[in-house]
Length: 368
Ligand SMILES: *Cc1c(COP(=O)(O)O)cnc(C)c1O
Image (cartoon, rainbow, N blue to C red; front, side, top):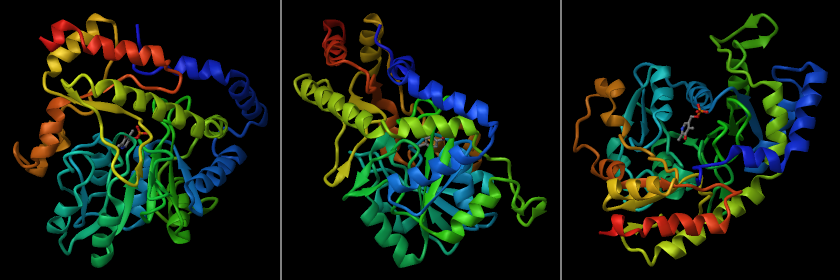
């Protein structure tokens, strides 16, 4: 069996460090926020090349707070893409603002900057590009338009820890960048977690208050806040894992490079594209295939797990039918939803396993 990812293998490889970090927190009794979380904020903001970080309980909360700190609310519009995990859109809805979609680029499946300007109205409060699969959106083009209209950018970097655009790290180009530490993400907690990074002092201050009941000081609630605090144990674990992240990213990129070189010969699928100037961290290695059902069968027969990211674009999800979109509105997102398939990829995966996946894809039953 080849799993889609192997968190047990990751834990085994750093068990002593993780166990020691957890025991340290248990002994300190700093179970919520505390020194470990504060240190994580310092280390992760430095990692991204920004001044501040505010650790929270999920990536969704990170997006929610980043939008609230910009003042997004009822009567505002926030532009994003329909080809993303639903949380991007839910976070916009939580603020009371209206999500407005623009379609994605055909090759990278990230926001198509050439379609952005037409979606801007006087009500547009923010633009939320999604760094899908671990590859950043075309940030120069998006920023040029955002700047021209005086609109802020919040990066959904939940899949893109350490990804780069022309040498700049994910999360450092918009006013703020939001990350998820869900266990399966490239940097994952042993439970839930998230963080917002920003170089804007005022934004950081507002988000710090909002995550902890809007308190300016104890029991002085100056904002209508939330309980979005990060656990001390997660902070300590994430600090350990952050030290390994660059090595893990190199391993992911090596697995992806091997896949892409082997797949070039099997022309029934198309390997993902790494656009010029964008360094992909391969949270997901998604191929585009002509016969997805056949490919699913071939992989299942060989006991190889796979994923679909994502089979239904958000504008066609029942939960968001009230937005009034219909089939045909975003043809590239809809086409991608039909033909993407995510192959196993994780740092501990062996080159032999990558070869095994590719050979399973070349089975007669699938190629016909
Ligand atoms: C994972 C993810 C989120 C949400 O993060 P959670 O920590 O699960 O709340 C948001 N956007 C994208 C693109 C994601 O992949």
